[in-house]
Image (cartoon, rainbow, N blue to C red; front, side, top):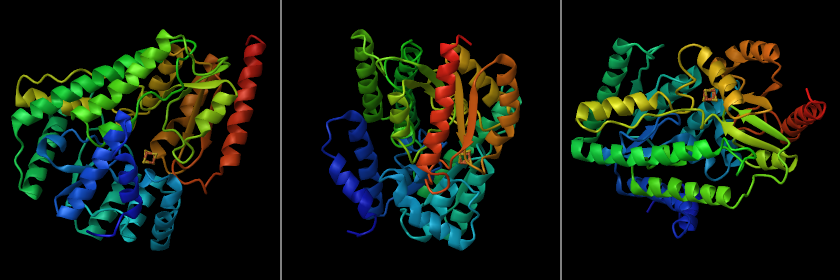
Length: 410
Ligand code: SF4
């Protein structure tokens, strides 16, 4: 057995006996990746905004490199980030791209047999994965998303054909054929998962909030989506959330500020939201949750693939990181209203052009509507760019201002 990937092997050993379905599911994915590596089976990279529901029915092992990097803790990615820097990758490229490049250089990532990358959400990812293709020689399929798909059947047909192209690409490079009965099974299982997701999302509208957000998680959709273990994980979390609601439990003893955080959390600081909760500030919603999905119609292979392709457009960052800035702006403002929030906080990476391009419009609209908003830069995975102290100082000061404003009845 190879001695590589010791951190992940250790994590797998730790988690494989876990009772908790979420941890158990992560262990299943890790175990799958490690077995594929040890047994020489194909590994497909799915960039972290691209779900794995086409890979699961083909029996191909998905590996979202960014999730692999975060699992042992974001700080373990520093050597990879430094290696990317030494190669000449600019530090303005966000953590996600720099990590994947650096980890490839340092051989910290199991090498891909092939890669699937959507053209959303940003140029950083498109540039980074081209570097990975160059470094590894692995074939890359760019699932090309039209600029505007909503209410445009021709564009939707184009997008669905991109999905079909991806399936053919994976068949060609793995030697496996997609079994349409299996595709139907996976789509139906994923429909059950989405039902639980949406049910939980509705409970997160309650005031006071029953549990601190975000409710949604990329953990299953990137790793095992459409398998019973993924569904069991979200079902267990939903049951726990429902129990809290039934028992009248709340996220904090006194909800002072309700926050819409319509972006990724600061991934290197999972404790940030807990720290905010100590101040009485709760997260009603992060970008994982502002989304809506229709169930996939599994009556024919065509409708199943179409349903999957359509659903992919509404995932986190897929929905907002394409087309015009109107989507992220409207989603954020609508979330503010619907979740009865007190303020909006948006963090962003320096190189996150689609988000930063919307900053000015969003803050103008918030000003017009009297909505307190704070936007700040913090690399999502690299704590050395903007420090924990600096993030807490800025967020803390903003939350105090919002609390004062509420006390004053503004
Ligand atoms: S945070 Fe922004 S720059 Fe980074 S991967 Fe996501 S969309 Fe791209």
